[in-house]
Length: 84
Image: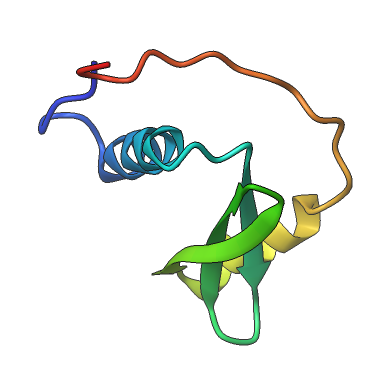
């Protein structure tokens, strides 16, 4: 369980996963946009991919993230949602 004492990134990721679960999303897409210095988070629900949230990030983080941005195999994780 994530609490207020956990890092901001842990709280954000936990919120994203719980919101995706609540909206019955099959996928969570994290798309870095180096030009705009942000990350767009999208949920795929019933086959449609829609913007969930845009999160700003620093230029240094963008360079590290863009450097690692490559096609990755899909993995399925099971997460326990609170109150469900």
